[in-house]
Image (tube, rainbow over all chains, first blue to last red):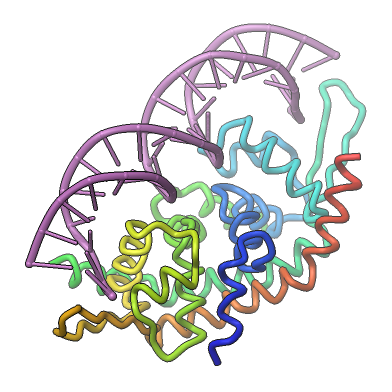
Length: 121
Length: 121
DNA sequence: CTGTATCCTGAATGATACTG
DNA sequence: CAGTATCATTCAGGATACAG
């Protein structure tokens, strides 16, 4: 039962760390979830929907999601420019698991907060 | 379809952000996963298993997990002291979803990396 | 409108020394 | 062994200005 423990210490290969490193940032999951709620969304709408993300981080986050094939970016060569983002199938397949995690959190956050207060009392 | 979008901008209440804030740190999930692989584990064993976590962060992470009721801490009043950590049922219920996420990552990381290289080429 | 380019800050984390 | 206390560091992210 203990033999597979060493994978956790292999910083480069450890799959857990890969996920955490990739999606543990502040905005990736949130952006993905917003895009999961709509057919597509323009840059500015995303910006306003999330509210407190900076323009820079929205760009960075979207670029990374696009690079990873989780989001598709479509430029319409108009003036002023229009750019639409939509989640890909791969993105949706990830979102399924994310949603379950969020659902779990919804169900358990109250109990967790209660535990925490008791602990700090 | 677009009416529920505003929850994402409600920084305080947004469930997604709560999860991300709580578990988006560097070590919580990893520690939980290690404890999910064993019946229980002592502090030093955890330290060695993970390898590159500092003593301080291991303590902080374990305390937070304990406060949230995801990990149970048992002190054996011996000399030298022995402290054992074990995952709780609540912790396990979370771990189920984490594991699915990691499984997804295992299945998709290659494709993601391939996408990323194409994108950066 | 959809970005880029800089500079800058703070919070999370690490390093180190010390202790019951 | 299992921590705590301090100080140092880093880098993700924000603010701002500018541009096609």
